[in-house]
Image (tube, rainbow, N blue to C red; front, side, top):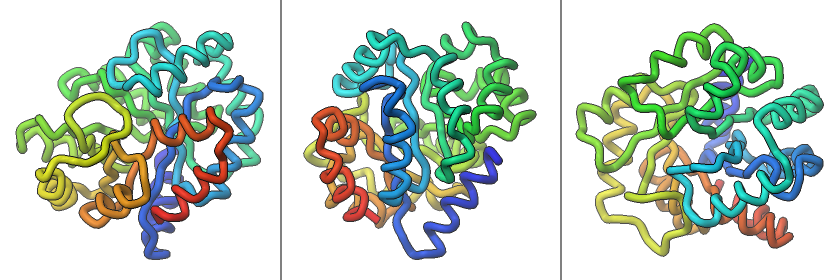
Length: 257
């Protein structure tokens, strides 16, 4: 279903008057054999979609926690090919949309057309590519559109307003609003400017706006969600699952909806 599956899932959350919550996990962290179990668990916890990280040796947008998870996944022998194969194996069993978070180099090494086609065959619904600037995105937009894969754009607080408005217009599925200046990872607080930033994006976006980076507890999730449509939580989810604290993940998601 691709892009339409994300649209439907997020609309259902909003119709139920819930904040949208998208957890991030690293594919292959703990081994690919547990990927289905983790996705099923997060789906049952109430995730609107799941952002699935592809381990990469030069992850410029990732902070220490997700970098460590990527190293563990690479040490387990995880590859883009093996991830897509694993996703294909249980695509009929899951209902939650899957969004890959990866970088340009792995896609080009894999092959652009093959990547988009295999994503569709594996039940991947969207992609996030942090190191692909808007000016260069045409190298991938056509193959993604041909396979109905949503291309989710990231907006940065440091970008000029004109650029943010253009990103908001182009984004598919949702707009990923980076709510800190820096890489992923837990923060104790967000800048005072984040409220105006999120509300400006929401006023210019035809898709839901989700705040990500630096969100690690229910208070932050609820606060940021009051200015947009929901949140994406990565490092905290990765840490809790790595430490075997699944109950805390459930509490975090339920308390943020």
